[in-house]
Image (cartoon, rainbow, N blue to C red):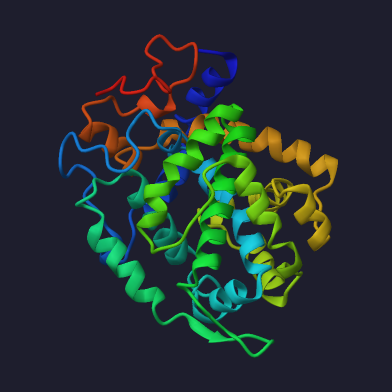
Amino acid sequence: MGFGDLVATAAAHLPLYSGVRQSLERLYTPDDPAFRVDYLADPGDPGDFGPDSVTWRVMANPVAFFVGAIPAVIMQLAEEGIGKGVDTFSTYKTDTIGRSQRTLSAALATTYASRGAKKALLAEVAQRHAKVRGPLSDGGRYTAFDPERMAFVHLTAGLGFAEAYHRFVAPLSAAERERAIVESLPGAADYGRFEIPHTQAGVDDFLRSFAPRLNRRPELDSFLAVARRRSPFGRLATPLQGLIVDAGIDLLPEWVKDRLDMRCSPARRAAANAVLRSLAAFLPKLMKDTPPQLACRRMGLPDDYLFRKPGDADYRLGAPDAAR
């Protein structure tokens, strides 16, 4: 255990962090019963990924999810059809925590639940998205089930989570990034019929093909304004929210930053890196009975399995079928 881990362990026992722990518990426990899943159901069933997947490791850390979601949402809202759909039908402006709960629950169910346990939630998500449709400025129409836009949403989410994990939690190799893309194929099928590239080069080309369609839209600026003043972690984290948003902006591909004229200053980037790397180290020490931990329990593994690092005595991540 390094010095940073020792500091994180000590910090996790300070009274201040009882509020952080409660905020985490609230985020991981959706108020909406339709978004609750039994992660212990079907013992031994790895779901679509399994404990030695890159995806399980990346999605386990809350910093990777909540910071990685920001560049994904920015890119999505910059596209007219997706931006209008979110602005018109999402409740993120009036129910930030509830919306965060539902988004997190859907992503975690896709990742960690057994195939049988997640069916009801996926059906609920599909039903709610069925009403998302409307007109475009060119006279066309958008729907939540447009295959090309669904692929864009899926791939921008994967990009954001991977980049946040790589920067704030632990480095991902080129091979691990490629593996994560292949792993995501079954998860994509959970939400509808759309094709996605199977390689990093293919993903990069597909996302770049959207460049002419991405603009600094009012819906995007509205989201950024809300994101800077309302934290899904509650009031305790509000002072850090602006830094978290800047960190997410800095994770955007360079061509997107140029297209949308969005940049994070070097000073803000340095501050964000320091704060978020510390958060990524100690937040797992506050987590209890969260979906990643319950899924590990379902597979007969210790709760901290996904938070172990290379060099730890029991580190086995990345060894195919090591836990089965």
